[in-house]
Image 1 (cartoon, rainbow, N blue to C red):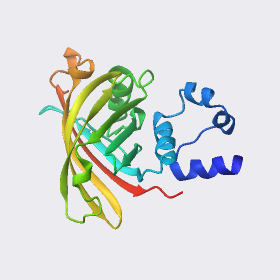
Image 2: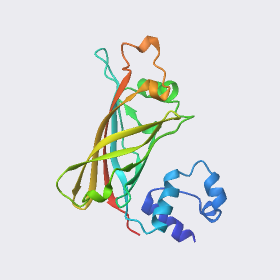
Image 3: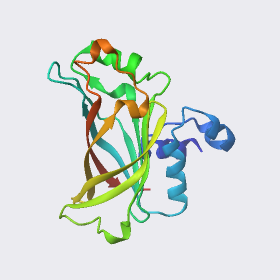
Image 4: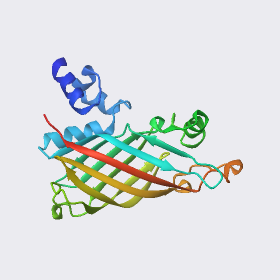
Length: 212
């Protein structure tokens, strides 16, 4: 009913129309419904230990000696299953904010084409999750392999993530690089001196247990 739908939306931070929820076919076909919602429903249905992150920071630096080009995004949503190691991250591209409005405009219109590709996503799995104690307050490193999709181009990636439990919350930190050419992102000749070919990315995600 409507009350249940509202409660579900409040708990997950994902909004969707009540009528669409009653019609599974319409729910799947509606592009405004994040894929993460379907994954969430699958995890809950299976009784899996699901962790949700709505507190996170993803930043990147793509500048050169000529000019600093950096941006930060705090609006990602991520799901983590500590038993299976499955991990999904969805980042709205238009939520990357720059120091200068013109940079943000160029980023969305000329490089990321955010109207056409509104989200960047990662779907992967922690290698051998059963070997780790995710309740540990001592930091440890895990290897995550999956598919990174940016600008509509998917690439297989393996990343090292530092994990620690603080007050019952799982925090994951990672740094990695992304080559613009790997995702068909053009670097105009006029900006060669200002825009780096490789972007340095830093992410921090804090996961809390999902509470029904």
